[in-house]
Image (spheres, rainbow, N blue to C red):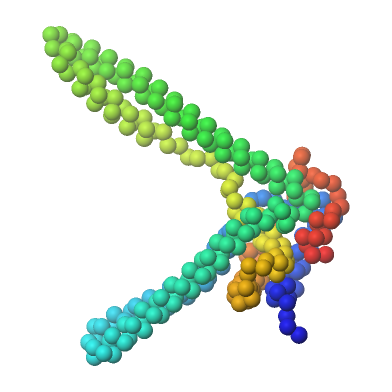
Length: 296
């Protein structure tokens, strides 16, 4: 029997256990994840990407060293050209493979950001998500207002300080040269104002406060990435624009990512739970969305 798309991405038992356990904690014990997660989806994907790119870089460096060695040894011109052509072909192949992995990781992160509020949250988590969105929007507004206020204050302070310095300089010149004030006043004023402006701008920079990341893939952990993998086969199967060969290629790479998550489970699945804060609680007991997302 030909396997359907929905059967091509299978989670191993230990990762299924992760999903079952978090479903019980959230829906039956009225808990939510502590966010931002210690290891976010984005960080896990970055580690996976580095794991795939590192061998490609090493292979490319080895081939470059071998090519330089052959050129130094002064081999025959025909053989040398053939080896150089082969080396370029291999380097191009490595570059193409590297780009494929990079594109895959970026697309998974983007798809996660888009799917999370619609498909990947239990009902008990939606209030927490809305609270996070409000915090991110408020941070963005406060940051913009703070930057505007600092720019305005700096301009006012610079003008006042510049004016005072010019007045002091004029008084000093008047005391030393009572009959030769007008000629140098304008130039001195411009120099003082420019120097004071540079000093003031250098003092502007202060350590920025710690903000929540703007993307949900940088906040939520790998448990929610597993939920995406549960939903993804059905999404791909329902898309008429993805040809069969492309879907095979997609699930081949996703299967490799799942194996990586399984191998490094202890390092990547580090989430902890807490009681919902005021405004985050939806009550005990899972709604239809809880069972639907977890595949129960």
